[in-house]
Length: 219
Length: 219
DNA sequence: CGTACGATTGATCCTGATCAAAGTAAGTGG
DNA sequence: CCACTTACTTTGATCAGGATCAATCGTACG
Image (cartoon, rainbow over all chains, first blue to last red; front, top):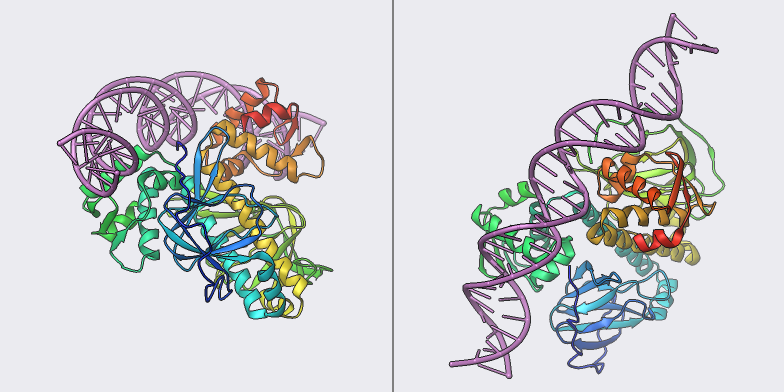
């Protein structure tokens, strides 16, 4: 739950090219960001809508005293940074080196006006993300540490291309801030799940789901 | 965090009339529900979109073992029950007796196809609700009991028509399930805020904000 | 090889949960 | 209208899960 300056500069701040598709097919400028670089900050003008082309992004909010909350992770193909108001309500940071497609907000609106299907998709994606946020609220609101970590692993497994083996791009600190726990508790809980035979941890960022039933019953 | 059968039947299950406006101006059938009546259940077909005409609604999710989470409260004029999939992911219940306008999902889609402004509004409301959910995740993920209760009171004050005096429609149990606390902790925290002079509690459902600065610094 | 960061493990403390009881308010039926 | 019931709220005592403080370990990197 601690938050310190973990940010470094983007390793290529220059827009590289024009992507074939932004949010569900919108064109936009591609920028590369280095691990831990800030893509946008809390309070920044929300003039763009973003999409992950490669890598992983986290949305974070920081309380005045430094406590950090990660609201969501975004993987390749997912969009983020869409706001109801004029400014961003969270910061976005690169969890790993990544390529991000930025599309001007206005371009999104313009296209939505002329394209019903797109407009519907836009809405659907917002509603889907809302459902995800509600699910996460359930985890934060009433689950134990063991349940939270198990839920997290199952969520990652579901969103991962390779079933059964997770290559977690994020640190224990990120997981902790996502689950409303401390890094120590996350670590201890993973150890506990290993001892139960639910998972196997060949390297700290790689987790093999050994027994899903056991994981699911822990969640 | 306990969940027991708190539901009774709607006191008038018959659609009463056709409302002038449903979601942002959509027509729909009005139904009255008694306090604690279920409007729809988790898993039910999401064929309608709802709007509160009068009263207060809560969206709840229940874990298998009975723990209950309230995801959001909805007051007069607010809509709820919009889902990405075919079924509802939460239950909706009447916190107080209330009148609800139900609009067929299809009617919403149809109108969105022909009316850009409406479509945009629909999207905006989803994104705004998402921002609210994110805010709440922050509360659930990193705040103390005192901070949660203070945040809650400030949120209610912001959404209340009368500034300074809150007429809470929901019980302490509802507040607890919304904040991820127990009813005892909520009660104790309210007492604590009273002792600090931040609030005044003439009756248990009425709370006067005496010192906002003190409340805000607690949040 | 040595440094630095991330992860794990250990010991102790504290906040909020749990268990328990009493107080309060609102209905209900006589 | 009042006694009784029932639901809701408050307060108290104790307990436990996870936070905090602290140290060590492992691994990637310069």
